[in-house]
Every structure is written in C-alpha cells, then in structure tokens.
Length: 308
Image (tube, rainbow, N blue to C red; front, side, top):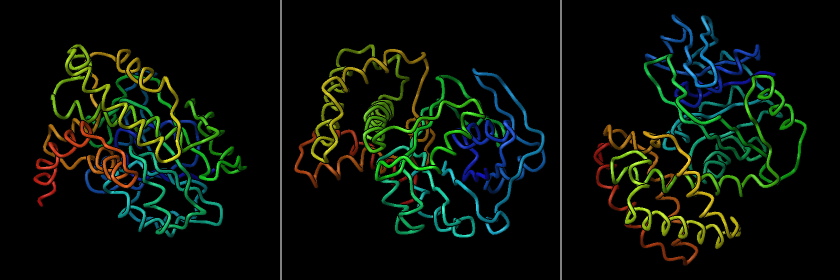
C-alpha cells in the first residue's frame, strides 16, 4: 500500500512515522525547515509507546513526483485544509482515499468540491503529540487512535486495506459503523477542552478542579450535544458524562493544540471547532450562549494572529 502524509507535525509525524517504521511505502509532503530536516536527518519520534528514529524517509514538497497513492492522510491544521487539497490531484488514482485527521466536523464538505466526493472519507484521530523541532515529534500521552470510514457508512475493501496497514504499524485503527457519529463525539471532547483551555490559559487538570469552570464546561458540552441532535446525530444520554470522565482521566499538564496555538499567538482551529458549532447552531435554531461567548471572546486574538 502507498500512503502520502500531508504535514509532518504532531499528528502526521507520529502516524506517518509508525507506518514508515512498519515498512509501508510512506511519503511525507512537507516544506521549509520540516522538509529540510526530514531529508537531512530523517524523523525522530519520542513516544510513551516507544521511541524510534527513521534515518531515511521519503519526503518532498512536490506531489507530482509521488504519483497516485492508495491513501492520503491530511494532517495539516483545519484552516490549511482547502489550500492543501488543491495540490492533491497528481496523487489521486481511481480508488485513492483522502482521509482528513483534523479537528472539526466540516472537513469532508471542504474537501469534496476540490478532490471529488468519491475520494473523501470521514476521519479523526486522538493523540497528545507536538513538534519539538522540525523532524522531531514528541508523543506525550494517550494511546493513539485513528478512525475513518466511508461517508455513506458502507464497509469497503479500500477502507479495510487502510485499517490493515495501520494494524501492521501497531496503531489502533477503527472503522466505526457511523463515522459522522464518531466525528461529533470527538468534536464534543476537543472543542470544549480547546475553548476552556484557551480562555483560562491553564492545563485541563487545573481548570477541571474549579467548580465554576466545571459548570461552564458541562453547559458547553450539553450545548454541543443539542446541536448534534438537531443535525440528526444522537450522541447518547451519557455523552456529556463520558466526556467529562475523559477530562478527569487526562494527565496533568495536558492541553489541546488550539490552546497552545492561541497562547503562542499563532493562527488556530478556532473557526473549525467552536466557530463551526456556533454556525451550525444558528442554522439549526439551537441557542448556545456559553459556546457563543467562548468563541467570540477568542475571535479578536485570532484575527490578530491571522493579520486581519
């Protein structure tokens, strides 16, 4: 199987590294200092599941040199997704899967008009990882999970092949019966953690210990569940409770990538996460005052980060 990884940061570097380590034909599409590091020093991953170094990896900034692949894993930030998709054409074959691993809910809708809906899968991942320096990734916590599936929920041979490739690499890969349900479940978890973390500027173990912040977070979780229900996705009566339990189980010092980007003054996935939910709530006639407040309180800094 031939796989292309778009982006070699915390997500792409880890999962792409595991695939390449297992001997699967993997090519990283990168640029700048990251591309230079991959070409000259290879890829280093420090992981709670075992460190490894790949002295030689396939890396390029030119998709035309790669040719058609079986799967393209998009591991860029959500706000970079559309631009990244415009360059995928040379790597698309008749059965190529394009799998977005970004946080958010609208990635398939962003990709479909650009690459063709027949190529697009729903996808998500769960991992706590980040860039130490170009070509050097640290997986700090959590047993990584990848989920993906056809948008029409059919079980296809190409999806099974991709799952088998991840299994060879020792990665927990799942093909849920309803990928949309799984994507909303992930969004429920990450959007509130991101928003509360970005506002409070402290890790999850600090803000979850505050009764006042706990009440705000639980209200925000209920608002997202209500939006999902209005969009035809029933997350279950215990979804909010289960999500809070996940926060309780997270290691001290844990933060979301959106929070880290905001604190570093970088463009973030604010619009793809909280902004998307607020927009869908408006479309669906669902009132989300807490989510709206969190989102709009963070918008001014996001505009500064984007130079707007």
